[in-house]
Image 1 (cartoon, rainbow, N blue to C red):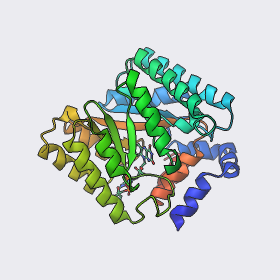
Image 2: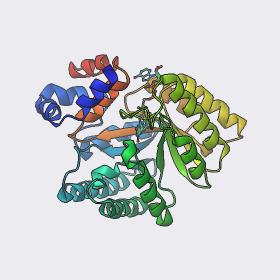
Image 3: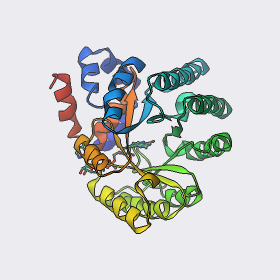
Image 4: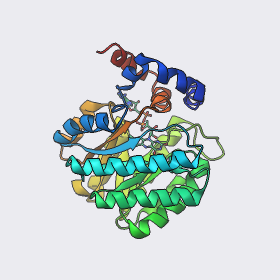
Length: 305
Ligand code: FDA
């Protein structure tokens, strides 16, 4: 109930405007967001890479409602990739992209073209792109665009959400040689007809998907903070004889940083999802919906502790 309310609030334009105009809001967002612009994101990125972490950087934006907005986001990513390269942060840093931000809800073909341009810029910068998973109404379209992109850029990563009933099947389809697949629980409010609802059912699905990905030929990217699922992933990697280079863990910036360090010290590849941008409100609300106790973390950032 609380999660649904918070997720509904995450989508409110009015609340986003209110939060964005409050100076304390931007300060609070720093708990989980790298900064308001690419300059701040690069400054946050450097020490993380120096500490042996890898990154996936995302530009946060409000819902894209016009072609001009979609073009501006494409250009933001192209510029970001060039700057990551110039700063010597690639290939440690790749980028994560939401196709909806590139205009997927307006014109699927346009979003595909924009994604192609970003993949080309990533190749030029010596790195890769991962396509985020959004709500279930976009899943088919996203996986179709992924297949197109992989023709020229086979390293393009997919994201699959364990809460969707279809995902175990999608894992089977995507567990092919060279296929980079991020597995996460899923962050949107989805109906029972398409998604498991209880934490236990979602966790069981996560483990079934993990079994498919770890036993397959692709490159699993295990995106969770859940200690039990991380331990199961470590176990499955050993069981299926994967070396540390043949899979990775992914965690969000600011979440379980001591676990990020522990996994990296153990020889694992650890990729931190590093979002930046002035439109941080929806992202922050989704973090609170996942874990209401995150309010305390955000509050401490707001008062500078
Ligand atoms: P969950 O939130 O259920 O937490 C499980 C346990 O982890 C908790 O009980 C606690 O023990 C521990 N834990 C969690 N947060 C903690 C904290 N702050 N401090 C201490 N312990 C904590 N979603 C999506 O729909 N599309 C996408 O493209 C992506 N992309 C993505 C990338 C990456 C790198 C990550 C890590 C996640 C995503 N997600 C996502 C979000 C994902 O779907 C999910 O909502 C969050 O990761 C939260 O789920 P967890 O698996 O972490 O478990």
